[in-house]
Length: 199
Image 1 (spheres, rainbow, N blue to C red):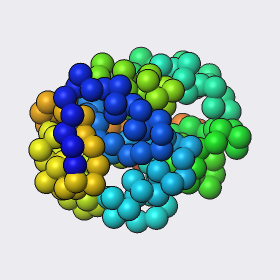
Image 2: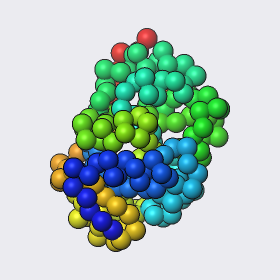
Image 3: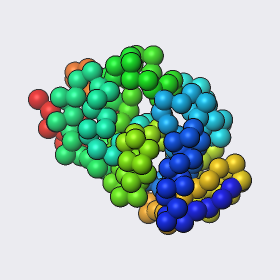
């Protein structure tokens, strides 16, 4: 594996845009990133992690305009956008024609979306079209990597990683299902359901 400095962000974006998988820093942990519409890349990501089939992969986006075009109804985002960027993942419904592949998109045509609170991550997203499928950089069942060296120890020379420095310990994002009312917390994180200003 090659560890690249953050000045090589264009090289990372080129690899991902060409159908590859790279490790990138986010605002929580390092993540394995690929195009959400590329079946081969998604399968490679899952193989690297040794992750069970069917577990959803979150979609990170740079700006609301990048993700809203895929949603059946983007109005719900006006109620939760104040929690972005940050540790908040919303499960929403998308059009069948969105082009996302399983398990980024579920059989119920839902995806989990989040805007990361990290300028470097958002720049990578922008260079790759605004949205990427990102799953924590770790072998399934082990702790996620928080620096480039930990990624290298875990995956060896299998992937390229962008060195964004060491990331502080942080809680995983709150995951809320917004596809039906009443809304449900699927994973508790920093934001509580009672904090959501949704009527």
